[in-house]
Image 1 (tube, rainbow, N blue to C red):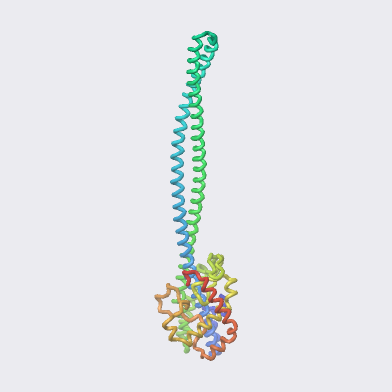
Image 2: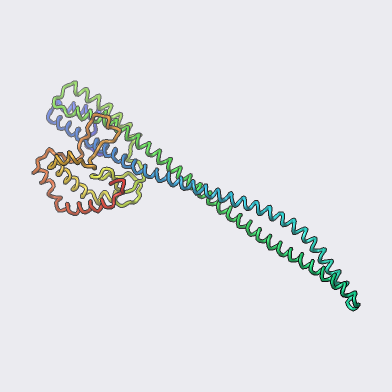
Amino acid sequence: MDTQQQFTLAHIEWLMAQGNQDIRWQHQRLRELQRTIQRQQKELRIFFLTVDALQTQYGRQQHTNDQLTDRLTDDYADRTHTLQTHKHQQKRDEQQLGQMEKQLQQLRHYAIQRRNKKAKRERQYHEVYHVPLVNIQYKKKYMRARDKNDAVEQQLSELHHGMDLVKERLRYHRQQGTALMEQQQDLDNKRLQLADDSENLKQLMTTMKQAQSFWCQFDVYHIQPCLDMLKQQQWDDGLWTQLRLASVDYEDTELYGRHHWDHTSWDVKFECTHCRTTTTGWPCLDKVRTTQLLCQPCYKDTRTSMIVEKKLGSLGAYLSPTNDQHQPSKDRLRLSALSTSSSVSIPSLISSTSKSTHSIINDCKPFVKKMKSALAMNQQHKDTLHPLLV
């Protein structure tokens, strides 16, 4: 945070030393210091709202990851069941193939016998072919031997065909088993990746929540008391002593927080509400709709329209206080839930409504020409809002 002054013990002692010469100058510097701390408080509360918006996005992402993990688990279970079925059928076919191979050996041995018997009967038949009556008897023997041999050959052919079918099924089961195991490995890798992503997301959410809690305590117990102290009009030695002691605690706590919980160096993934792209970095907060996150390009493009919309909203709230009481704006800036237990009120982050109506209208005149385009952009944006953010 770039500021002209820092609330440190050295700076307070310098103000005390210089103030002995010019009390009015000293009070001006104290008011500047007060504005510096208020800017820091504003930045912290923007950080609180940004963390809340990120927590909402990450909560949805975590829910999506859980659903995807459940689906992957179901797919893995289905493939496991299918793989077990293929293994069971493969084992059954292997047993059947073993039995068929034994049957083939026996049938081959029997086929050799029938083939030899056929050859023998054929030779005998040729020897007595010209002998009447005898040739008829040997012809019948030859025909029986031939038919038995043909039957065995047919059985061998059918057995070979059956074995080929079983072998084809075995190849299919092995191929399916290999493919299913590869699919299981792929599903398992995806589940592990999702588990790692979910764990990293939980750690990031925990870290952000811890940082939010720390800076919330810093806001409640350091920033706000210092601001209350700086509002004093009469400064005596006792008040200066309290301010010096407060500056020591303030400086030490802030340095600790910057060292351990400096979110400016964080690279987080978030979805821009406007362009719907996933970006890595620290998001910008929508000035009007404080539950929405913007990437840097979208923030630059819509910054002017957000300022116009914010000023018009402030003007409308000032001119219609009754309606504002009955219909409070959903986009009004609020402190994180961590600090709701505190009695510290959140200072308004919009322009003060203590100005006169005439003064506010004059301030808004440069933006009147941009009002129509801003409201048109706002209406288009509302039409594309995520259902959970409406």
